[in-house]
Image 1 (cartoon, protein in one colour):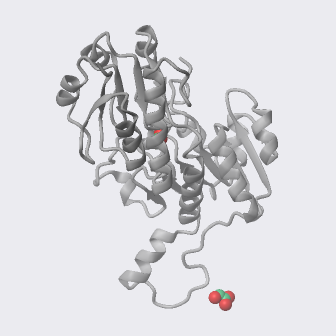
Image 2 (tube, rainbow, N blue to C red):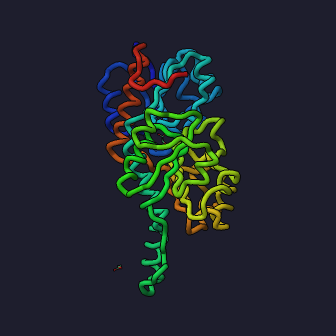
Image 3 (cartoon, rainbow, N blue to C red):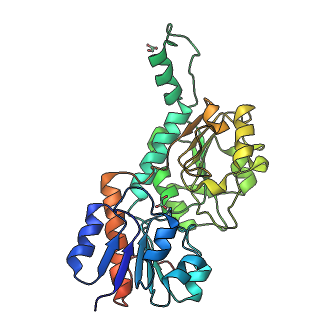
Length: 324
Ligand code: GLV
Ligand code: GLV
């Protein structure tokens, strides 16, 4: 009898093919683009040996209890793992797979796009062009801030931060600085980035890119204390998780001109309600969590998630396993 697996979302074809062709599992999938209702999920995971999930599913004690003692492997199609209760997984001896690296290029690319859209006010500009605001060519109209000769700060230097810096360098950035819980010389050397304190990062960055994982330590780390130290011309970019930002403080900073602009691919909650004050600000560009959304990358993520799951069920090392 084959191991039983529940797949919590319609995953891209590459991952699905791997599961189908493996002949190793009997799996059921929530065959929809929308999340499975929690009640349904709790029923479906019962007795499963493995679960393949996406980041909208809270994998907590309640869900693990509902799954029961057969559960050996949890594979998430994401690099982020803040939706997983790692303590509960560890306590139960459940192995966890995730999808780092395959999405680095796509996320870095989108981060650069969001940064430029924010600093050069692209969304505002297309809106003006379309709605009659383009009366004539004006000397300071829609002026923004340029990357040339700037200092770019990275909060949380990992693979994605490095990939962003590599892409920004040709824009003639003067200096890269970063902070993290400790210096990361190997990664920093690749982009000649200097290690600074969080305070210095806030004070010196013309562009600040948030690239850290959401953990209890980074929760709300981008708050008034940080924004109030930033430059007036600073552009704040977040493609990590909404939870690292105190959104009330960000709103204040943007609406009072304390900083110049913000580009957010992630918010709290997701989706951000359409009446949220941040949507009223011209200097805030909000995207619906699409940093890894290229066809190639989403397929690679689904394939890696499938391979992690199958390896875990065979009791073999996973291609990408989270150390608990
Ligand atoms: C996307 O946010 C991911 O964690 O993969
Ligand atoms: C801009 O279009 C210029 O010609 O300076």
